[in-house]
Image (cartoon, rainbow, N blue to C red):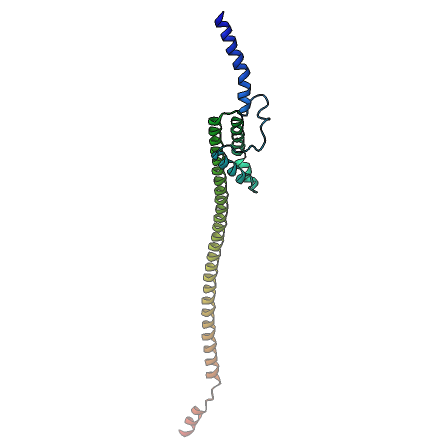
Length: 195
C-alpha cells in the first residue's frame, strides 16, 4: 500500500509540474502565448542573437526576408523560450536556449549571405549572357562587313578592268580616227618632185 501511495504522489507531482515546465520553455497548450512577442535577452548570447535578429529583420529586400524568415522565427522562439526558462529559474536552460537562438540567428545570416550571393551570381550570369549576345552580333557584323568588302573589291577590280578595256578601245578608236584624218600632203609632195 505504501508503494501505491508513493506512485500516486509521484504521478500527481509529474502531472502538476510538467505543464508549468512546458510553459516556461514556450510549450504547453497555449503554445508560448504567455511569453512576450519580443522577449528580452537574458544572457550575452541572447543579446548577440537579439542584435542579429534585429539586423536581419530590418532588411528591405523581400526576397531576402522570405529566405531568412523560417530561421528568424526559430531564433525568436528560442530566445522567447530562453526568457521563459529564466523566468522559471532555469539559468542553465536559459543559457542553452540563448545559444540555440544565436545559432539560428547565425544560420539566418548565412542564408542571407547565400541569397545575396545568388542574386549577384544571377546578375553576373545575365550580364555574361548579354555580353555573349553582343559579341555574337559584333562577329556577325564583322563577317558581314568582310563579305561586303570582298564584294566591293571584286566590283572595283571588274570596274577597273572594264575601264581599262574601254580606255584601250577608246584610245585605239581615236588612233584610227586620227590616222584616217591625217593629211596625205607629205606623200603628194614626193610625187610632185619626181616629174
